[in-house]
Image (cartoon, rainbow, N blue to C red):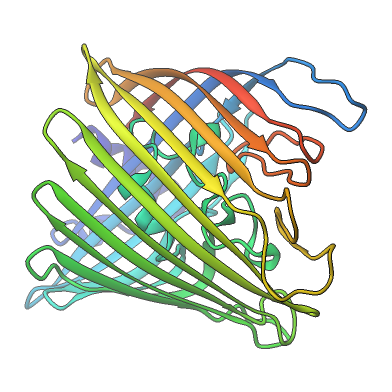
Length: 360
């Protein structure tokens, strides 16, 4: 009730005539504040490796979402979600999941700005106890998470998107999404996934395609397979990814795999993750070919390690702590997906973290 009253008040300030539709519209205010204290380190260009203390906001957000019954089982839906810089103030209005659409027994269609179909697989193997974000995001190497589409990224939020999500068919769902990009070279993005959930089993596959996004004649492909199984007290999961980029001198490819586990420990949960990004390979004849953090040649791979503990204070509030590290080979310089920490090639960014989040 309090959320609805606040939402009505906010809508009143924005001039939205909610009162006229009070019988059929349901609007909810929601969000999260997620902050942590971090001790960071990693080799710098001058050869130093200092300890840096910083306070970070981990995709904190504020949003309004609503649904209106149109009759016959058909609903109109909308969402306006804004990013919040909880550590330093400010934010981006409607910069996160923002859309309008229709929903029925046949599924959901929506248009706007939102995460793509590859990202949907992240929760199957990713750092869910710490909300898949911050330097604990397990998309540090997978899907080139820190990179924009124009720099080879596949785990992105894409504007100008249209998407269809199917209903569940005995635990099986699928989604397709495209973004028009709307630029002079007529670039576009396509993606699709299939996810199966049945009791302790969860499986997923996704395909992503960037057509001319990095330039004319440069097309990218990404394929991810992931799965998890809950053995009762312990859940284990794995992920495999193959990425292929076109360059002016040939193809640049990479394999990535990872394994994770969630283990109860007293009143909380331990999450552990290991991921490996292989060296950049392919037919590219240019020894300096690089797309995002992926470079061609030997010693261009990296490993990522993560260990966290999360303790819930309530259904909406938790504290967490842990350690994560990226071990870059001598010609690699991968960094963190959220709140990156730059290092020189061969540097190993790491962070010791203590944080808290509250959901509302």
